[in-house]
Length: 176
Image (tube, rainbow, N blue to C red; front, side, top):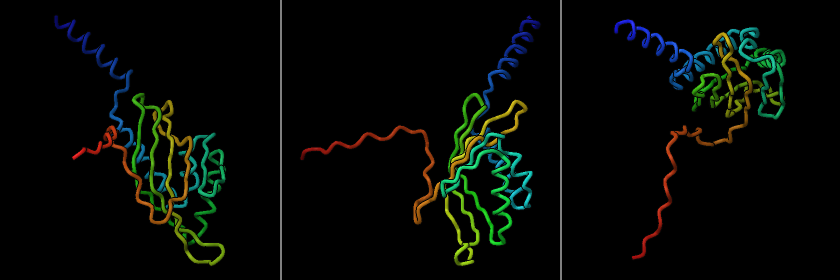
């Protein structure tokens, strides 16, 4: 009997390890921590640390529509930003989604980047909405596959977190 219980426990443990089963919120928290490491690399002017999180074939779309492909091109673009004495970046998480297979996730953030306006020489802050797709590598690390950044309209409300709830049915006017 004891052997059967131990065998069942061992089989259950192995199945749990194979099937993933991590809480998607934990996966998102792990990726947000990785994202913070990237922000720390940006703050310390570490282009290698910035590029390390982008897959070799990653795509970054800037708010002006310019499409950068590959970690090297993306790091070069960050190099231009970091060289700007007015450069500052703030990222505010909005929401995220992780697959139950724990191999892909998408995160949305509001991003504010301050840089020098080339026309006036004054600092200007660009407000963006960023959608980033992350994939988990065979070693368990997370890498950015794509990041699309779009201008956030002035005065636009912060993005709403999707609760997953079904939309309410519209009310039908009652006759009096």
